[in-house]
Image (cartoon, rainbow over all chains, first blue to last red; front, side, top):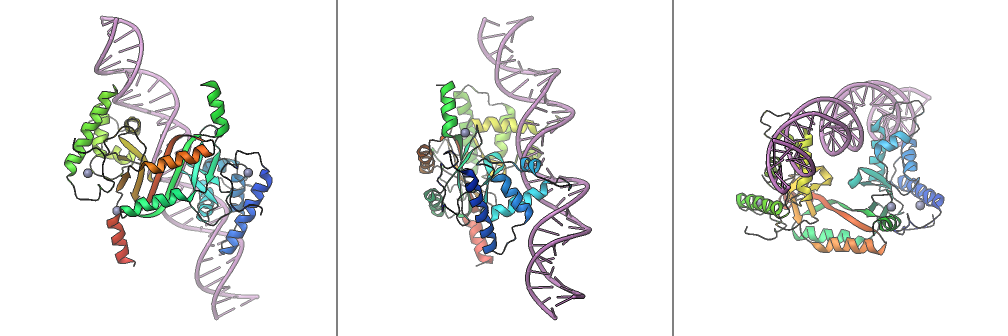
Length: 169
Length: 169
DNA sequence: AATAATAGAGTTACAATATAACATCGCCGC
DNA sequence: GCGGCGATGTTATATTGTAACTCTATTATT
Ligand SMILES: [Zn+2]
Ligand SMILES: [Zn+2]
Ligand SMILES: [Zn+2]
Ligand SMILES: [Zn+2]
């Protein structure tokens, strides 16, 4: 477990993704252990698929990639695993693309600010808490009570932005 | 046209919603006029349904309420109107509930910060630009180029929060 | 160890949301 | 009138997400 909080630009910087993923997996085990939740094979398998890289996958893409070993191919299984993982703060739902992305911040259950590249699908997660607290402040001013927040931006990651710039300057 | 920018807590304060809606409708006409876009009957009808109150409606709820006058009841018509209205900044999509809400800020095309009550469905739109620019700043720091933002909070509006407080203190 | 209680997995069927494809219509400029 | 183009109408289909129920595995209790 070498990192506490991931650099937001981690997905884009060349890095040892093997250890990146295995750290996250180990963290997931620890989190479930500490909360007396079972980190079952299904849940582990789904998380592993998401840990393949820093992209988001749709539930049905996970369904396709899943090794079903003779069992019937049912979306509900995938959704159950995803719901669990999300409730543990191990994956985030990407609302702008109906997809799910693994969380690489080895932190307790937390909200997320997501930057989604619409070209390559990479998701950068940002730990910036000022946004969340600003949202909270705005809410309080109007007497609104927040249960959950959704903070996303869709656009181009640095490398895809450069590529787009090159063809259309 | 009595207001320039709606108070975020407008939906909750008792107000003359008749003029609230008709102002928004007049603004919609003006916007389409100024951009040489046709504000057709379908588009007007969909917007009118959304202007009934300050709640979000799903596309299929709009579909049900729509007066089809003998024509076949096709979702694609509703989605086309919604896409148009959204591109004009006259409605906002509420990603957290796959729904659409009319915009009452008589402003040019703009992003939105939405506070969605999960009990009564009311949507408060907030014009706070600091959030958006903060998001932009975060993006720039990582070399990310933003095309669109998604800023939402789900929770309880003031009156529903009081009601919840009463039963479960 | 037997038993009861509970959480998760497996299966089937279905609901809810969104889009593709193509023919047709109507407006607007010529 | 006619051609171009944006909007509509229609049908079919794709994508995303749940309900309901059975069965099995794990854990707690006796
Ligand atoms: Zn990595
Ligand atoms: Zn990219
Ligand atoms: Zn109103
Ligand atoms: Zn409410």
